[in-house]
Amino acid sequence: MVRAVATVTALAMWATSAGAQVTGNVISRVFEVRLGVETGSAFIVDYQGRQYVITADHIVRGAQGAFSIEVRSPADSKWRNLEVSVIHGPDPCMDVAVLVPKLPKLSAADPVTTGGFSFLMGQEAYFLGFPFDLHSSFGRNLAIPLIKHAYVSAIVSCSALDLKGSEDERLILLDGMNNPGFSGGPVVAPDMDRANHPLAFIGVISAFTNERIPVDAHGQQDPGITVATNTGIIVVIPIEAAMSLVRQYASQKPGS
Image (cartoon, rainbow, N blue to C red; front, side, top):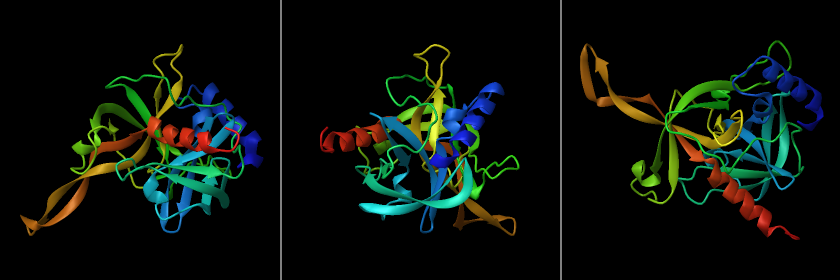
């Protein structure tokens, strides 16, 4: 990923000059990840001069300590190995993991805000990732994430979605259409606290909620047979949950 700085820079210039809703520094930080049979999305954040990779915990749930994960970046459509160590979220509700690469820097793109901002209920948001292993290439050897649109619908407790979940932990709900493969990708929304409202990371895609619908058999519903349908409610882990893990790791390093 490091060797393609020129391509990433060109991508950022294209997104800015085209008046794109999602800027190049966001796009170039999102890439596809694969570990065994699990495939999803991930993105890069900055903290104290180092870069970390954020993804959904269920993608790397079986990993411990140091391991190699396959990645495919916007600047290179080939799968390549990335040496990382993993920090898992504290419980199943907080479906987030931090991957700490051996290399301290993976992207030369401008940083994206990860804290100290506000967003509003009902405001627009965007989420990025690689659903169904799809990506844009513009006819070149690139793997650029898909971008989808949503609205911030609510902030709820984990217990609202899982009876065993904590009432203190919070999740963001989006109104939008998520697909398999977006898990681990970032959600961005305009930072309402800053001039010109630049995009900020507000969360990590976890899943979409299903509704079980009876299947019609010969013109009649069979309640014994159902199919899961996408309700359009997207479950998002707040970015603060990921950054809390990053800060915890950074504070435990020698010399911190």
